[in-house]
Length: 449
Image 1: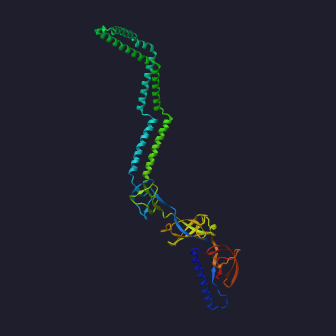
Image 2: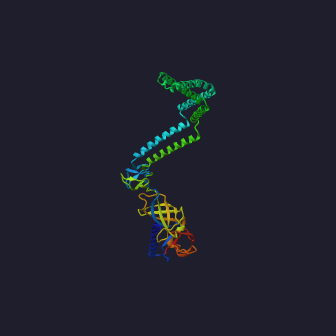
């Protein structure tokens, strides 16, 4: 029964006692003729009839969060204590960020370098392009020279090897002249031997030089030199094409390296930002779990923050009442901390799972339309869930109507002259009143028994 039920019962008692007093007054008043004394009555009136289910419980916070740092470090700033009220965006705590700031600076430099590398890959530097074009021109010149040399091979060889045969013959003649005196023991003592030996040496050196010159000319004047020159041209062309039109794989690799540098920079910036705890909403600090100077691990709870105005009622109903409760039903709530104020709400959720304990209770959650001042999570609440309701109907106090199983009841009606019995039809049987569907009219007096 709601708390308002007590008031209705008191009113009913006053009416019954008042009626009895009135009857006593009339009995002592001289009458001209005998009449039936007026009994204590209750007037049939229009009003609301409610059937409710009682659901006691407590308030719970729906906006409570454990705040932590996204990275670890030494706690250098802590601006709040339990019970402090903070506003959204306020800095609550911070870590030492010396190393993190350095890492961010390094990541920024690495990102700038990759940006430059990507730009030069996609659009080469004009100076590099000019250098590559010059290299290609030089390679082409060398290639043309090699082709010309190869076409003049025979003539060039005749020129470079023309004196080889004469040098050979002179060397052989000098050798024979030297050998003629070298084996003659008589001639060994004469200066002619030394002269012939020197001539032979010089002739030999001249011949070897002629052979080397001829061999060098021959080695240059072949297809190998032309192939090497052609390879240099091809390499120079490829280098220039890479600068003018880089390959898709090269651009993709440069793009990937640039993106990796960007992600690293974002990660370092995020770690720096996560070294500060900022209030995500206006609320009250419930707990502080660290002290200045302590080393705090990443994601470890440091501050518990709650929005005490964001609450809901966590209540329970008995087993037989659970099927009667549906989401969306109107609820009246009463608080021990503020007994003079009642608020309305709505059934938001019902959980089909029995609570642990001896009694068969089931959870019901109620959303409050308004939250009174000084009402916070954890406080007790009594909820009266409106299961059914009729507005502006004929009604009588439930204590006066003994309803039968077929929804009929027998009541006594005071006509002003006599008491008559009348069968009525009852509709909704509420907590305090019953609905009168048939058998009575508004304003009629029903005898209170």
